[in-house]
Amino acid sequence: MNHTDILTQSVLTLRDRDSQYGSMEETMIRTCEIFEMITGREMSPYHANIFMHSLKLARIRTSPAKPDNYVDGINYLAFAGEFATRVDAADAAINDEILNAGMRDLVEQLRAQEG
Image (cartoon, rainbow, N blue to C red; front, side, top):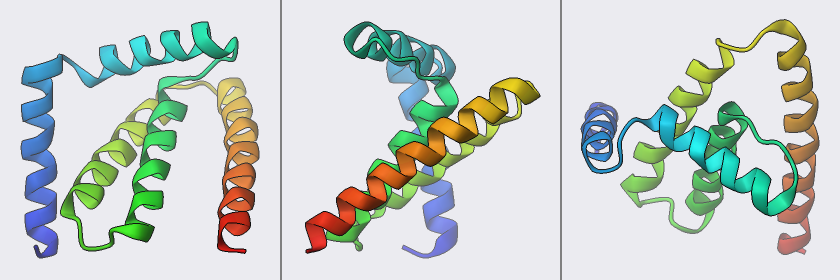
């Protein structure tokens, strides 16, 4: 796939998922509520999308030729951008602090796996 094919597939995937599952915003809000019930920790839709984008980046490491990783990664990053522009300055500072801590943990885990 070339870059325009990947971008086109990203849009088609969004349309397909919306028809199957409903709006991404509602799905992410519901996902965050479930996460909070299970863990007792808050997660915003912004963070949920950053996490899912991170998952796609992790999968690219073992399957770099699989187009789905790029297609979904683009979509999760786009939704993260949408949610990021909705938060106020105080929430953004908290989000950055949580995200930075999570990214540090992820990097440490990946380094440990590599040996």
